[in-house]
Amino acid sequence: MIESDLVKRLQKGEEEAFRELVGDVYHEVVKIATGFLHNRADAEDIAQDVMVEVYRSIRKFRGDASLTTWIYRIAVNKSLNAIRKTKRQNLHADVIEISDKAVEHNPNQETQTENEERAKVLHKALDALPKNQRMAFVLAKYEDMSYQQIAAVMETSLSSIESLMHRAKKNLQKKLLNYYKKNVY
Amino acid sequence: MKCIDVENKLIFYLEGDLKTQDNIFIEKHLDHCGKCRKLFDALQATWSVMDDEKAMTPDPFVYNRIMARLESSGMKKKKAGPIGIPRLVRVAAIVLLLVLAGFTGTLLGSKYVQNNLLPEDLDPYEYYAQEFYLDSYADESIEYYILNQNEYEDENGK
Image 1 (cartoon, chains in turn brown, purple):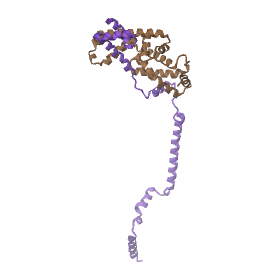
Image 2 (cartoon, chains in turn cyan, yellow):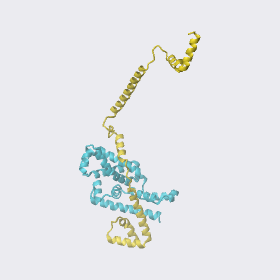
Image 3 (cartoon, one colour):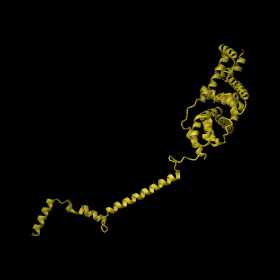
Image 4 (tube, each protein chain N blue to C red):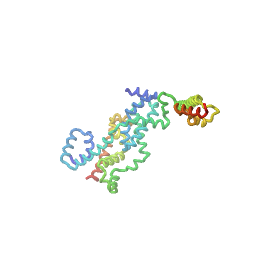
């Protein structure tokens, strides 16, 4: 289906067109929200909110960006708002500090599965990234978007995205390797 | 290549961002440096968490959930039933049908009762008593009747 046709049908209020759109983008939106929120239930909640917002605002869509770019932008904004509301950023201040505390205060840590621990460490490292680096990284790694597509979603240049991605990876590497050196070896 | 140089490039090696020459140096280093190998393995394992998180099981009820959310938020009116009749009209039609059914039932029942009416001046208990218990002729055999009749005539000199 050509996107412009779908947009026209959506703007006419065709329910079948909306059903098609949900089928096409819902899971992609969940992936993006998962990258930010690290929780599937919260991500599904955000994704449904995004689809409701799309249904409500589709008449305002002017076609300056592609429909999916517009939807992914809504998904990023809603995810960031959700993080702001729950003050997650304040809870996950620094991956190494918190992880060290976890080692000291949680006697059951040994019983946690390795995957859970890895996920926890990764999430804290991601949450500690500056906002733009995190946006770029989540869109690239959770949604497998090209740097060009990310640039469209974030309304910036390709070179800015390349720079953001490079810095994001550097920062993640630093935090993760520091954690491994202190807690694993 | 020293360990610190490898560590600084591990994530880019993992992501396939390095030039061929750097890739070869790092591969060789990892082959003989156990410490860097362990760090790389840990990094790789952590990186794979993202792939696990991206794995999705399609939810067949997503569309219905979104529709329910739209309806509850008042952005979308509830569907008017399978043939497009508004809900209020459907309810009114059902009520009308029930009233009509009750009325028809009463009418048919009253006609039935009229056809089987008892005599107006007869008490129903008396009627049933006569009809089923006191009319002994109904149960009397013809032989017994003739015998009784003969006895009656003899007694009365007929």
